[in-house]
Amino acid sequence: MILTLALVAVGYVCGSIPSGYWLVGAFRHEDVRKVGSGNIGASNVFRVYGWRLGVSVALLDAAKGFVPVLVTTQLVGYGTGVLVGVAAMLGHARPLFLKFRKGGKMVATAGGSFLGLAPPVALIALAVWIVVLVATRYASIASIVAVGTMPVTSWLLGYPWPVIAFASFAALAVLVVHRANIKRLLHGEEHRFELRRRRPAGPTDASPSTSL
Image (cartoon, rainbow, N blue to C red; front, side, top):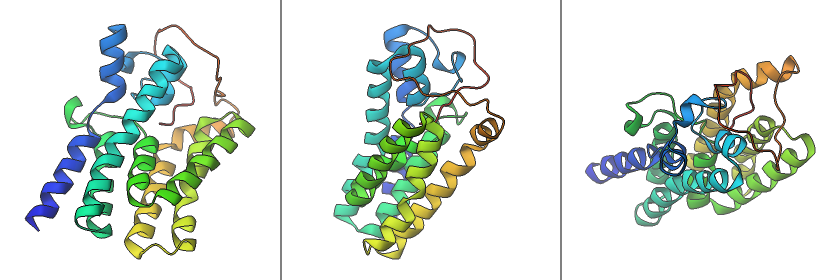
């Protein structure tokens, strides 16, 4: 029990690392929460500051789920690995290092967690994300659909029930945090993802597509 609690705490602390906030602050000397959508996730960083910082944030956000979950799963098993993955996602959403204020939308951290827990599920979700993003150019749709495939994929590949339950939690959580994006999609106000687009830092934009 003590080991489980310690690992869950480590997962939350790792998930709380505000990669986007720290990288933008270090390299651009700005607060990412005051530009674009105000989100600290990779999509907002990519859209405002370009692909180098955006991809770096995405990789770091995935790593903070991947590392603690992989280590835990190897040491203890799927059940505790799932708890650590949930903790990492919650840490990303409400980071300790930002005084529990709003963080990112957990997509990259969920993907990284599943890469450590059930790699085939994560890789299939990544492939789906890429296909949907290319087809629609909406990062929000790609994120919702990709994470939404994970419960079914986990079940089809024969993973134990804790993994399927975690996949279901991740799919529901990502859907919930994208409520505003869904509303904008329904009203035709959601911004499309531009691979080559780079916008200068400026006042918070009320309606971008920010998903990671």
